[in-house]
Length: 254
Image 1: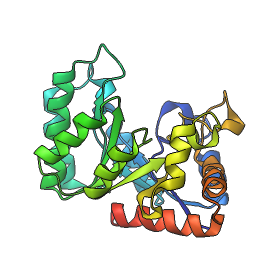
Image 2 (image 1 turned 60 degrees about the vertical axis):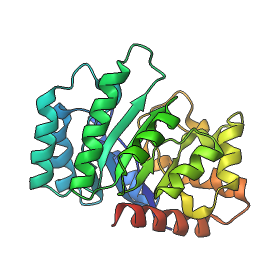
Image 3 (image 1 turned 45 degrees about the horizontal axis):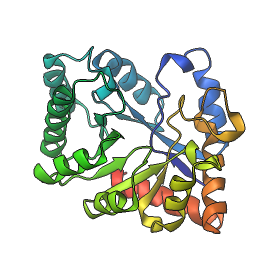
Image 4 (image 1 turned 90 degrees about the vertical axis):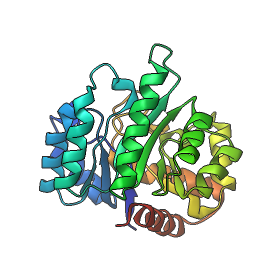
């Protein structure tokens, strides 16, 4: 059984003390590949170095909207230069966050659009961070005629919004939230969506599974998310592992 974690921040400081052990346990659990999104410019060098060293880690550098305060205009140019030199699997984690009221929405929008244009130029999919802003993100994708697709990470929208992402060539990322019985809307969505829409993710060290509530999340817990999906859909883990892994390979062109 092979699984792909399509969103894991294994590069961040929370894993500094035991990263090698975490990677070993994840591999032993069947996680054959992890996509590692960037969040700000100062982390890109280590992210790329780590992914060069560990061949099953795939980089997706980008400028995350919640770190708006540390991003600078020159970071977009540096991202472009990085894309000229490297071949990441995606640009991420990018998008709009309207959940945090203090984040300047216009500045977020400009940053998001600039990175979408880079993704279009370099023919790369994107990893979308979207909170309380699915309609705005969808409108932006349509207006820019974005054609590279990608993954709506930690999807939390409606079925109608899900269908709009799918129509534009996106997959939807489901993670630890699926393991909580109270997450009825997301669990219902995971049940009813076509299987070709779904990819798995942990978002480690965040959004931990129910069995590890209060702990640091880890890519080794990806099989727990698969198990929750299998229970919800009444399908075998083997079938769902094969399908979600194939979906990830397709959207990321692996």
